[in-house]
Length: 559
Image (tube, rainbow, N blue to C red; front, side, top):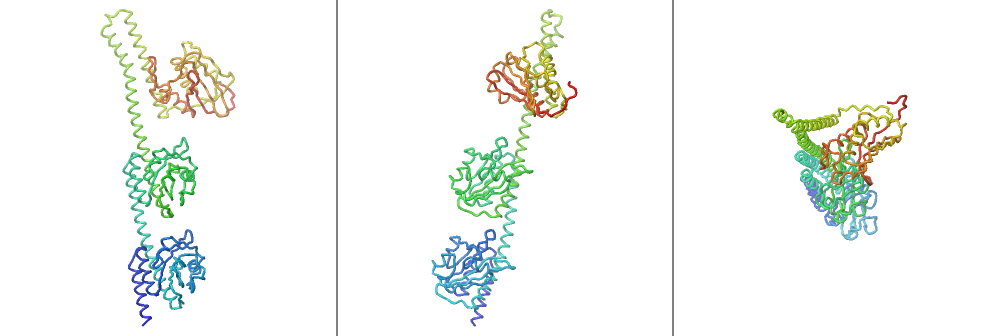
């Protein structure tokens, strides 16, 4: 009758094991039934954490503090550790004089214990142990019964884990899809982050979420958007790439987990101020290029798992693509605006001389016989000057269009620089302006003659028009670059014009101001040659420097 009763209780335990699909509901039911079947005071399950090779208290009855305190037992050590390592039952007749690591066992007054391994397909899942508050000699029947209960519990745990894994996988797909949907909806970065970050925080069950984007010029990460840690953006946090938590993620292009922020290498003081305890961050990468970093944090200590890392990486991939898409959209909008502004300004610039020429021709056509010779010549002079202005403007616009379309074929050739620059000065300054020439006569370079003409002639004309004499034209060549400098003695470029000095149609309000295209064209030619044109505000006057890369070439003849 006793065996029949035990079998009946065992069947009840089996029914309980099959009735629940979630571990949180399964384990408490199993433990209560197991305690009843064995007639014991306590019952607990510790499951194996394979990453740390430790047994972690998962559920308990009669010794609930084991779970509340997060007890962890290394495999191979102590009572439960021996059960898991040896894969066999272990009996402790006298806990007070046994090797136990968990101080709760003695605090609770447990006198005797029995533990069995939880095995599934030859793998150790954990340990099931029971205890009594009075000394008890567990016999072979007790061991057999607890092992049978453990075998059924192991099957139930595997079944529940499979169910939870399937559910997590389904939720992960749903979460990633939610991020993907948001990423495809918003085009502006601010709108994108406003939708994405709260979703990512909720998906990871975190308290904070932030995105930092790379500033290529400064080699820094700049806080761009955040939820739960908005101060990071408000205070303009900048983190050098390679340093601190976020900097390491960006430099190494790999996830980083901070289990304990208080004792970790973090540069951002806001993380400590907000009381963040644990963090997980992953890089935002597109086509091998790091765009930035996304990280989440919690206000209580948390052990981020490999599943958390994988999920955040999946989300980050979508976010990175969305950021790239949003940036391309913003660049397209800006380009459209620039084109519209350019067309409007160009039309205005063309209209002025065209209207003057038309007015002169109309007057001459309709009133030619009524005009005296002096007025007629004055009108013709205005027409010629405005026609020349119109011709020059059209040539400059054509230059810009060729450069934008990369229609200029750069052909560097060996040149005696002094000869080439001397010709350019003569052609550009027919008025005979005073130019001090500081170019070595034997300096040989490799450069495109057209580029030198377009850039240097423009700089010389500007120096005469806006600067003051003396004007100096100098040059020197290093191992890798040729530097040609045009410097005048005028007032220099005004502070308000400097930021847009090389933009099309940027000019002063001077009455003799040109079209404002010259420097834009000059820099475009310099860059088409692989070099650059820069402005250097000296003590007095304006100083422009043309930089052209050089290659070592043996010259047999010079042009």
